[in-house]
Amino acid sequence: MRWILSLMLMLSLWPLSVHAEPQPVKAGDAFIIINKASNKLAFIDDNEVKEILPVGTGKSQELTPEGIFTIKVKAVNPYYRKKNIPGGDPRNPLGSRWIGFDARNTDGRIYGIHGTNQPSSIGKFISNGCVRMHKSDVERLYEKVTAGTKVLITHSSEDFKTLAMKSGAIK
Image 1 (cartoon, one colour):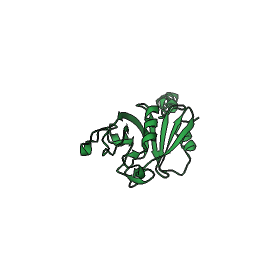
Image 2 (cartoon, rainbow, N blue to C red):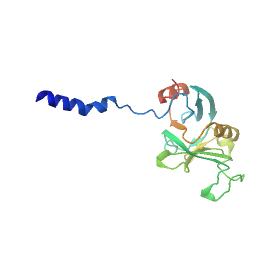
Image 3 (cartoon, rainbow, N blue to C red):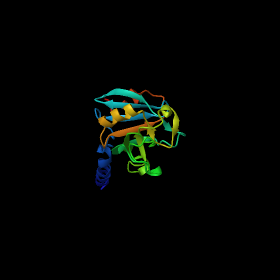
Image 4 (spheres, rainbow, N blue to C red):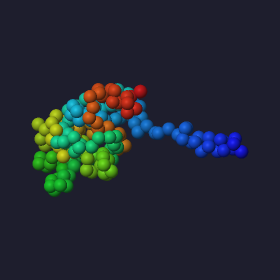
């Protein structure tokens, strides 16, 4: 009887011991890391940091959410709904590209990486939560990423290679 109980206990625990958490980021895939400590964005691909670019982030720490997110929406000349400004209009604060991700259970239309009509804001803590980039930088990044690309937003003193390795983007 005792051995049956031991066997039942062992079998009930067995799936837990072999089930591994899936990695949200796969080595070699395109990956974006935004470090709010330095206001820099790194583009990682093919197991290496390809480019590091300046960005503008939230006025306060909590405005730009931290975590691993997924790009859901991409748009050329995005429409600015808040003030009814069409895409391509020089008054549009979103610039020429929108790369939206699913932070805080949103659909990629609230939080994003985008251009700006205020290039002097890059490098500053100035936005309401989005990540601002220079026009040429966001247009280049836009061409390199697809829906499904992962984005890590953090506030860290670690370098981008270390962050990418810890996230699984670099082996």
